[in-house]
Image (tube, rainbow, N blue to C red):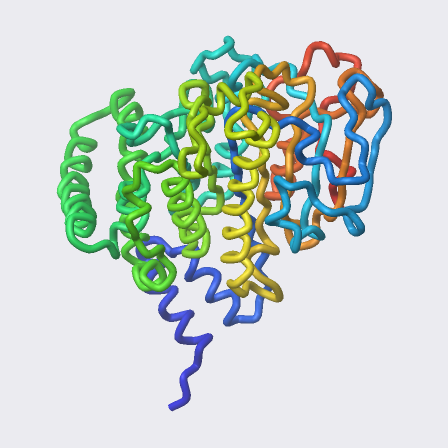
Length: 456
């Protein structure tokens, strides 16, 4: 009898759905039935220590600052060579949008804006107080997934397993950034890990199975308000248990597309660890573990002075930010050199997503990558402007291959980082018209809505 792909996937999907249907199975079913899929994925790459606007300005375009930018500048990148920092993504130039002059004046500025960088809200300078949700948290809640959000990154402190630095579900509800690649691998791919990783995954399953009965028994003993309060705990527990079940369901997918663990996963060298985290992030997206990924390169006020010794440097980013030179290179050359390494990693991520067919295109066609610094425009930022690089057109919904320079703060037509984040929410299918906090200095401006100039 001939193999009927559609019926087989349908049957498999029904049996898997008896527990929790995995995203990868949904995608396969849709492809088999001929129904179009429009998945949406968002990746945030956040580097510490500021992003001077001139470092992402292509040759032939005169850099402007917020005081001189009085009109909208919209230039095609078709005949432009990307600057040194961005050269690794030159071949995808038609998918790139360089965005200049968005402001984030509600943020505190300084060495790092911490959670407010992705949250567009006020914070006490250098504080870890969280005033609201960040854009990656908001997208994760909207899109869901086995892991609604995955945060991976590096810290200058090798003993940090996880930190809370830039991502949040809501007020004072931080989302962890996993800083040790080997531990992150066991968390995400433990069902296919060998040795202690597999043992940890199995032990976690056994514990959750045991606790499930205990939790249900405890729930039956409660009544009234106590039972309602217990519901929040039960919901959290069920989320953990369900995630484990779904990971088991897609073990074959994880095994086929999961990363190969090498020495860099346990390396003390920051470039190795960041490389490993990008590997993990790419695998998590391809395997359908998440639709929202945040990659943090020492972002947050506790890590901004990291040293990139893996690039042959013996000068930290704080010293570079204060104009320090090293081995004949100026602070600007050193900063661009480090930034270029990040775009090497971004290019690697793009190649992996581009290699996976999806619908009539590839995974890259349905992914938006946003690169920015938690430090806005400089080492001691004031957030008058917040340079960003956006990659991807989300299935044609974004107009790309452009350099878009908005009017400066206070000028007619000026926009803020919050408008960028509303743009991403709208791409995800949300009807939300505002995000974070409005800038009181722009009270006569309409601060609602997406960046319409970026939309197709």
